[in-house]
Length: 354
Length: 272
Image (tube, rainbow over all chains, first blue to last red; front, side, top):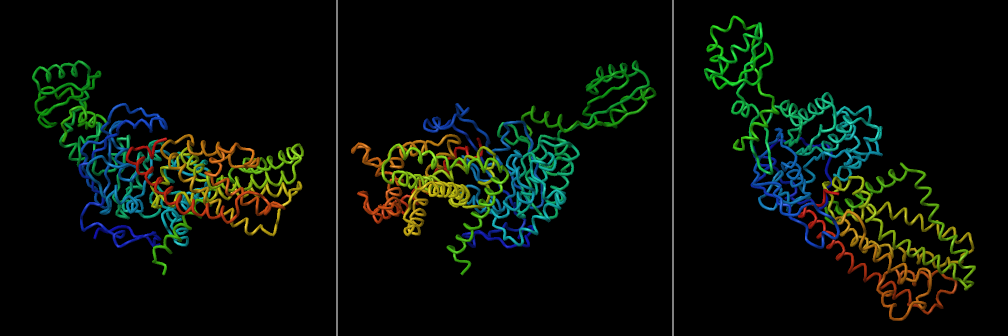
């Protein structure tokens, strides 16, 4: 049985059946998404009377997406707007259904058993308006806890503990409207964590906050995922955050998975580190630049005065060796990794990462 | 015994209801002036019809209209409570979160309607008390029976409210069901005048509305000479409303469930 963070309180789950207590088999993925496709179609005529839609022809929001997430691991989902991240999260939380394929959470089908799925998922949407902004942090969590079926006595304890966990212990009686953006992000996270879910789904949890606050939120997420053994799916546009998570990444574009796997492996596969050389004078830098281009040793990524950045398949050692005779004018050099943003752009533009 | 599905379901319903009731209460108290204004404005009809009654100069007209307003107010609390809360949830961005909570979607109409119903009942009480202070005469010995009947009217209102909410979750804005129903009840339910005033062929519409039966029965129960009225009996009204609830509620819940499933498939539940 996959170990999961068990709550100290007992759940009151109306209509709970033996099936309701289904758990994940040993070592199996907590979240399993198999060949999921979602096509948004234009509204039928009667719906267009009720609600205007911008969809004029069918849109494939997800195209044959398959991915598993195991307990305790974090899966970062990255992609440009319209990549399909939010649609994927909506399917997992039961807000919409896949057109084809299936997904399970803790063994429950997200389409036909969405009710059972919802007590096992902690969801933090990107929109902070989902918080009860006129209510205190405590009231926000109390309301959510009751809807989760938590008993009052245990709930009071859990609310305080969760607010402490996310660093809102001292602000527990402050109204949502009076919180900073960073604190609101923490409150969203607290709400998602309160009922000790097996799965956390976080849609851009750091989207509107400053880098320092984002770092702290990510640390809480990492700690919770590790200590409570939660399978976590997180989408983010902040690529440095994805890098900081040091875990698996799914790169999506136009509904498809472009890359899936370990971030380090992705770097090894796609990132050819550049070599940044600082010369004593600009003339030496120019001479070496001409030399490497003429000899076909490398391409010039950047040439700014005395600084020359080379990109080569040779590797740093061989490139330095090839420059023998020119090294006297070198003041310093270092290996430069491609920024994650550029790396992802490179993969997306190549179109054949998988 | 606690594990019995009915007991567990009832307890869960109570828990969901108390969560939403508290949410509504806190939300209302967050805007105190708005609350006071809405309660004060609810007594305005009681004052307006006090003067209109002087013009009409018909015996018991004032009390008759007040009973009509009270009955319609209670029904409307049921009719509009859930839809209004759906509207609030959509506008404030909460609906998405409510729908991802492990609450059976069929429990949401009960839970979300509780607070607005309470507010509606408070407004209706204000009307009745104001009218009593201005001289309306009620047969107080029938008050307990009238209150039971009002509960039945409330349940009937919830049937229509749930049907209305079914469209609301898809349409997001506007209440097509309530628009039509509200229009019909204003004209044909006999809130402000006797049904005899309405041309006979159009009275078919009146008798198709639960409001008409609730108003007719309450007038028979509470007007000083209500038992002499030529309208249908309290027993008949009761049976009609009971039948409406017994048949209508499962149908309304089914339609509401289908609407949510349809919205889910279409992908409009989380959009505004």
